Length: 399
Ligand code: FES
Ligand SMILES: [Fe+2]
Image (cartoon, rainbow, N blue to C red):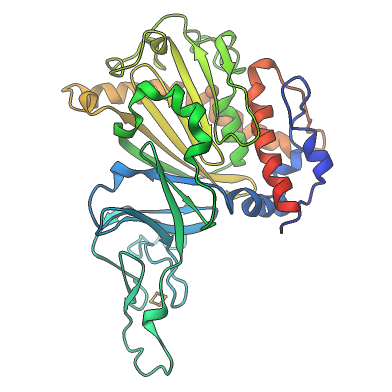
């Protein structure tokens, strides 16, 4: 059981809809004790997205990430299935996928993890070796250590579920499956062939200096589209926002931003730069879908492409942000793909350059003695839903 440093009665005021809810207590964005409570109550037993299946197509391919401050290895095993395990060496705790090949300037920075491929994992420190299932298969000079039983040593395993190509892991091995909670979102995405979209140019921004919830809120609410992004978001104004209702038990929150015309895009032409996604309807070509599979996965579906972000708190006021586009193969195979992708990334940069400083400044505001628990507009209805989802977890952990 975890204990919330903030009373549940106070937190509950943030539940409900925009008609009734107020913002979460500002200290939920700043306080170290609350952060620790949130890591346990939210991240300790929920499904956390770590990447996409096509990023590790072959046996031995692996991703090395952290989630909830835990180093993890996600690997395609010899049998073709995907497993997830702790990346902490069971000898003396070195993160076994961490690079030790670093410059003088970088050597004291936080460890660097890169994806890779191999038949085994060898810890760089004393060369203990683990197979793809995480079993210890080599440990030099340990024969003279009485009672040492390598066959009993295995990297701790996590539960894994793949949903539409996204790999989720769970620290709780008996967690209820995720997919049954996503059927509403699945229906909305039926025409997008999400399983077969391919991740392009994934990158991670480390220790982005604001609370993970500020990132989620900025991504999901469309109130600011016509204000902060005034002039560059006019192809999809805030007035065209609507959100699916949220009910306790739902595993995703999502909404739509209607566009003024079909095939709009986040770039100076306001037009999609790639061909429309095969299979989507005219109605779907005139809207953007924003979805959140809490607590980590943010999704955006445009007429010509999609993108995913994975949010991972690294402290009360920081998080890692993984970002990638996903495209159909047919788009990636186009001759002008690289060039067009550069233009698309440039275009999105115009929005990011407004959103990021706003988020940093909001974090500063949350520290203020005058920080509000403000009311929401209807165009922010999803924020009250997110609060509801969170408070359900805060409460469940506190009983
Ligand atoms: S800490 Fe990994 S082999 Fe010693
Ligand atoms: Fe924005």
